[in-house]
Length: 381
Image (tube, rainbow, N blue to C red):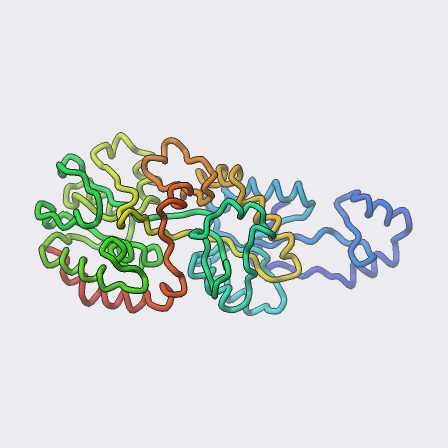
């Protein structure tokens, strides 16, 4: 039975112990030791197997998690409680902090910035293939790092791409440099600088010789784009941006493969006049992710077991189509319909760029302020 709740109830260990002392006999203990009835012997008394509590998103994210939950329950005999995020994954961290050192959540799906905060506050454990064998398939660029340790790991990704109108543009787009072409005056759109943990801004930086440690080249390029009149829109929502492209106002823009997979691939005939460049930033694709972290508590071994089930290639193949994002595991095959439009885990292993989250978290507010001051006023009327 899957239980979804706001807060996990605490088990009455003393009551369980009293009941055991009153009723237990040799026969009951023998049954327990044999695993009859889903019970195990803990500390010399009969107790139910402990449940695992997961913090997760609702909707399609939770629907996609069900196969992993069912397999975990079958293999361990433990139940699963789900606490739903409210307003965003990082908003669950205060719940963890308020109860600490009592552990109310064992495993969490969380944003990259949230994964970093968990590690900074000492709530999560470092991740390794020794404890979670499925992680042996995951390259180093899929981890959120904190002081050299793997704080959380990406399980679903979104990356920066460039899309363009192939009926408006004769020569294919090959990099961000091509968005400077004179014929694109008043027809280029860029993503909001805070989107994807800064991935839209950092894509310009990377293509022009910078990165999260040196954003000046990206800002210089964006200023040039605006000053020559090419910059026509700064978008924050994928459907709105795509509508602007289909209307003919925008001919080329940086975009997300969440949008190309979720919106274009499902309606490919409607968007046959749109082409895509998947690795536009100097041969790299800057990406962001949903990540998984394990909380340092008494059920961390159970949490590691769940993570091993969930992160395996076969389970990721079940999760991704329902979730709607690309699977991070490089061994997970991509749906043929999505493949032309989405960076797979294997793609990102080759040319994905995952910016240092500590650097991004420390600077993204100042990047956004600089963008608002220097770039946004240059949008063409």
